[in-house]
Image (tube, rainbow, N blue to C red; front, top):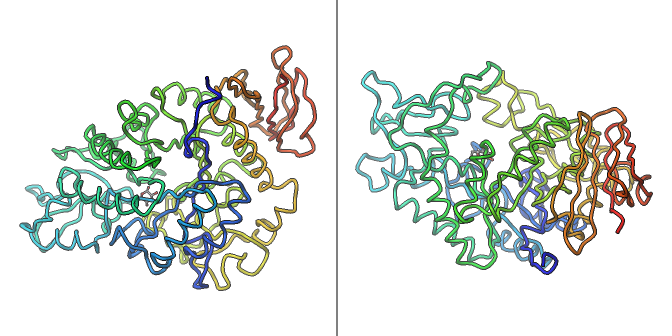
Length: 534
Ligand code: GLC
C-alpha cells in the first residue's frame, strides 16, 4: 500500500543551494563563510528547508570561485576551518537537516599538487593523472575541442612539450578517469567526507568525467548562432557523455552504498533521454541527476506542460524525479520570467512530483543584478564580455534586511547588492502577506505535510496556450489540483464534474480558504493549489 511506504529524506525533502560567498558574512571581510551560514540556520529551519547543498568551500585559488580545488579534504580559510565545517554539520543534524556538499571530480586547480607533479615531467608517476597529448604535425592542439569558458580546451606546456586538456579554465586541468590511481583517489576523498557524516554529494559536471579515448574531433553544431558562447559552435559528442562515464558513476554510487542513507546528485546538462541514463542501470547511478528543464524551456504553458510529461515518461522504473528552479550558473528565475510569473514558478516547483531544488534568495524574488565590467569577477563573463554570460549577476549577496549592506555584512561585499534590497529583503517580506517569501513558506509547509504533493501521481488534465491544470493523487491521502496561469491575461478552466475544493495556497492570499467549483477563473499571473473535496 502506497500510504505505508517509507520515503527517504532526499525524496521527501526540499534542497536549498547555499552559495557560500554570498549567503552570510560571519567575520566581516565582505565574503560569506561557514559561521555566517550557521548564523542563518534558524531562518532556513523557519522556512521549512531540510537539505542544504553547499557549493565548494575547499582551498582554491578561486579562479572559478572554488570549482578549482587544490585540496579536496580541507577548508579554505576564507570560509573558515574544519572545526567550523564540523560545527555546521552538527548543527544541521541537531535540527534534523541534511548536508549535501559539492564534489568536483572532473578537474583540479592547476595549483593542486597532483597537477604540479603531473606537469613536472613526462615520466612522473602522476603524468597520466591528467590528459596530455602531443601537438599535431603542424604544431596545432591535438583536436578541435573547445573550453566551456571560451577558446581552445588545450593548453601548451612548454616544459614537457605537450598539451593538456581543460574543459573549463586553463587553470582547471581535467583529471584522467581512465587512470586507476585517479579513480582510487576519488573514492578516498568521498570516504573522508562520508566518514565525517555528510549526507551526500552534488557531483559537478558528472557528464564530463570521461572523454573519447581516441580524442576524435567534435562535429560542427548546425544550429550555432553568433550570440551563443563559442563552446556551442561544436557538438561535444566526443568530449562529454561517453559510455564509460557510467562505470565511474556506479563506482561512486558503490562507495555511497556502503554508508546508510547517503545520496548523490549529478550535475547533467543533457537532453532528457541522455539525462535519465545517469540514474544508471537498475538505479545504480546518481540518485538525482539534476533536471534543469524548468531553466531551459520557454516559459509558456504549452512548452512547460509538455516538457513535464516528456520528463516523467522518460524516467526509468524507480527513478525519482527532481526539479531545479535556479542555481549559481543560470539567470535567476525572476529575471527570466518576471516578478509575477516567479510566483507561479514557485507553485510549480513545489507541486511537481519529485525533489525540488531552490537557489538561495529565490524565495524573496532576488533578481539578476547588473555588474559593471570593472567589478565583474566571473571568468566565463570576462572571457566573453560581448555575450552577456557573466554569472556574477545571479551570485549577489543575500538580502536579509534594510541595513546598509542588507544584513549580509558590515563592510562592502565582494559583489554589489541589488539596489532594491532596502525593500526587497527577508525582514520586510516576513511582515508582508503578499510577499514571495510567505508564499514559499506556505508552499514548503504544504509540500512537506502532504504526501500526495511529494509522491502522488501527476496527471495533466487540461492545458492551453495560457495555462494548465494538473492533479496530484496518492491512495489514502487528500488529492490536490493545481491551476496555473502562465500568461498575463485572465483565463478560465472548466474542471471535470464535481472536481472543486478548497484553495490551500494561492499567489493572491485573499483566495486562500475559499471554495472553488467546476470552473476556475484566474487573473493574469495567478496560480492556485486546491485541496479536492473527498
Ligand atoms: C559546474 C559549476 C560551475 C563551474 C563548472 C566548472 O558547472 O556549477 O559553477 O564553473 O562546473 O567547475
